[in-house]
Image 1 (cartoon, rainbow over the protein chains, first blue to last red):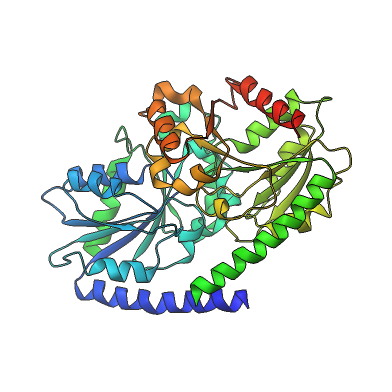
Image 2 (image 1 turned 60 degrees about the vertical axis):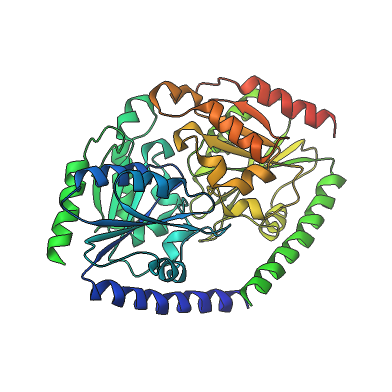
Length: 216
Length: 216
């Protein structure tokens, strides 16, 4: 019974994700679904992208949080067009929430839409929202055993951003082990080592976005 | 329809949690449900508790992970009796999983049972498993805005362990802001500042356990 209910929910989600995708394609829009544990640095990365791409790419953001509009305020202050979804308890964003949020965002002339998902390394990976790419962040502070313990998100993502590498000297964390484990789960995974705080490694990530945008 | 299903699931969970609780009480056992984001330091804390309470308290651990038996191996190496639940995708432990795991653990003579939940700051807070206390960890690396963004776990917990305080000099994180926000959500919350890695602050946490154990 419970399995059937879950299957129905996922089927309904896929249908709405396809509708979102058609709308994104009609606008020639590139869409990233950005996922991580709480506090891995997603919002700080968006602030950096706002600065880097100012006057070059028009970027919109849909923020997902259980409560508060703190993140939408932060990215709006960085010059990005932002809409906040407060999920009121729900542990992930689904395609229907995104479809509703899209009525409050002007896609005309937009180059890139980033969906910043609820901070959760588990549930968001199960729900397509119509994105081109799932991109996940893993902070080195979370430890090097995480790919094996949370494999679905590593399997579903196109890109892994290993974040907070400026803290590595202070941690027991082997970044090579993260990469090896992640690639054993998903050999196609593109990996960038970054610090959204210091800016280290962001050039490669920004270049990747521009290449994907150009290929659209 | 979906709301009704969720309500049925939570009602069934409460019934089984009550059965677990009766079993724990029959053994005079103290039970902690330990929750946090991935990589906040739950397993490292259990290793420290294993060392500190060796020959003084008999501690059992039920480990919850989506995949792998890594954590059960770590705490068993620290001298604790450990059973691993692999949830195979599920984002939290529920009372039924604990009831099943209890058939594989000998409660006779045990003083403290710790349920180490799946690393997730959202979903585990919704499911009682029959515990005396919910205890949550928040790593300072996750940032000082987390209580407002993930309020349920702060509301449900008796104790907040603010972990990795040894990293504070390297972070933009105001620990006073964490405490103030957490107490605005839950004025009864007991807060300890710890580093499971360096051992800093663990005495107060260990004393709290012994006091609670003595009051049982």
